[in-house]
Image (cartoon, rainbow, N blue to C red; front, side, top):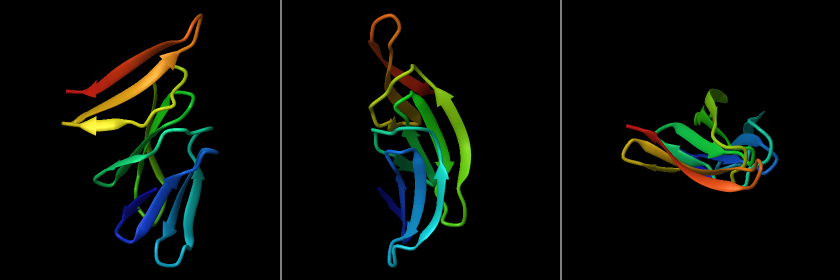
Length: 110
C-alpha cells in the first residue's frame, strides 16, 4: 500500500487498484487494472507504477477523486517483481517463457 495526503492506494492481487480514505477506511474508488499482481506498486509524485504477473506495467494517477490510467506497456510475458525507479529511469525485471524461461532486466528512460 501507498499513502499520500491522507489516502491509501493499493493494487490487489486480483488486479484491482483501490483508493481509501486513511482515517475512515471509506473506499473512494476501485478499478480493474490487469489480472494478477505479485509485485508492489511504487509512487513517483502523483503516479503509481505496478507490473502484473503477465509483464504489463501500468501507470495511473494517484488521486482520491478518480482512477485515471495513463499508460500500459508490456515487457516479457511474466513478472513477479516490483518496478524500481532511479534517476528518471524505470527498471523492470521480467521473463520470456517460450520455449524456455529467460529473465531480463529492462531499463526504460534516458
